[in-house]
Image (cartoon, rainbow, N blue to C red; front, side, top):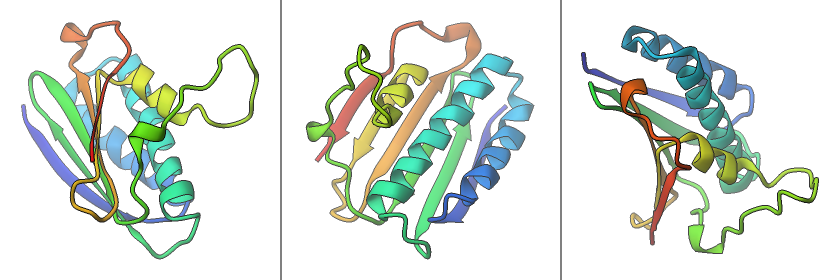
Length: 149
């Protein structure tokens, strides 16, 4: 069963709940484990929070486009923004021995997803692609991470 959907939201933190509900509704047909659905919703929450707070500086009125494709092998969630591009080469993994506040979003997304790709090649904003293998094919390795300038 293939599922292909799209949602456009505004760059407001309040929109994250609507995006999570949209995702949960779409993947409910895909017969996924509760753990997998939870991983997807948490990764989406962290990614949207990062886009809104860092790419758009918490300024409302900007578009974020979500696309979801589900097939027999994987779920692919794409998050497209048009704000300040995310420079993945500058990302530093947080020190997990220190209890700092914040800074865990990218690490958490990478840990929950099987593949994480940042693409800034358009010159405007960032396209973040999150891939989660179907439950029967999921590996326990942290996400595969890549970036395109």
